[in-house]
Image (cartoon, rainbow, N blue to C red; front, side, top):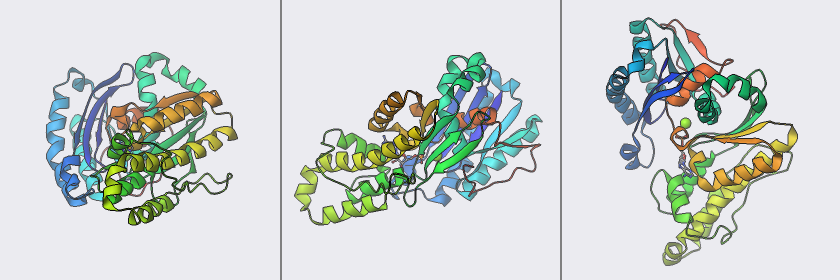
Length: 343
Ligand code: AMP
Ligand code: MG
């Protein structure tokens, strides 16, 4: 049984995972309501909240029947906000030492990379290792507020970055666009909701794709283009055309993600495609990538909605599934790595 803790940004999360059965229990305390007022995550406030919320969440875990079987503690050791990571790291060290079990440091991005497989594992835990062989090599897309990454998992479970964003992350582009449109934070879900009532081809925003051979993403031009467009529009027009603006802006982000993923899919005989990170919540993106996977003849795995944002279930799962990138320690010597890369 793996007890996992996550506190890299603005979610305090705890999970219990039994690799031979599945996720036993999981809890997430989100701080969105707190940071909303500030239009973004305030690191000091986030740290204070993590300090407050780990003890009650761990107390819930202790009430689970499976807690007595905990044989490993896992914690996010990076990347993330340094002070936030330190809170989770300290809590995890205390738990590992108290329970006399080893402590694993899990890379948050690698946990996102593995998260689309959590559901497949839960379906048939005993068959997962065999089934995974059929799904590797895997091409994955992580889209979140801080990252936009195309990566691969090879047959030996080695993760390699294929492409990243040159400027803003996809979620950041949606959040900044939403801010320009006068919407709240985080903007991605609001843009999706309002955009559902609009036309995606109403406005022609740039795709920032660059040459076909180039897999890296770029979203800064898109944001600038929205700013210029809004400067030319009277406020009443912005208000009445808000659904069209949201739908078109969102479509520009999604088109870039889909197009680069399509090019990457054509490069090699991948056996599956994965989608994860907060932006993976977006229904239009999920549907578009499902179509691409089908066209390429590969299995499509999108992280379940509760595992797209930050959560401890994916940390527990990666502690077990990520056989090539977990830092295994005896407890005292876990390092916090705020700038750790995906690979
Ligand atoms: P994360 O960085 O993984 O915590 O994810 C947060 C990011 O996901 C933010 O940029 C949100 O705007 C974005 N996001 C969350 N839900 C959606 C959605 N339904 N559509 C698009 N973006 C979303
Ligand atoms: Mg994240």
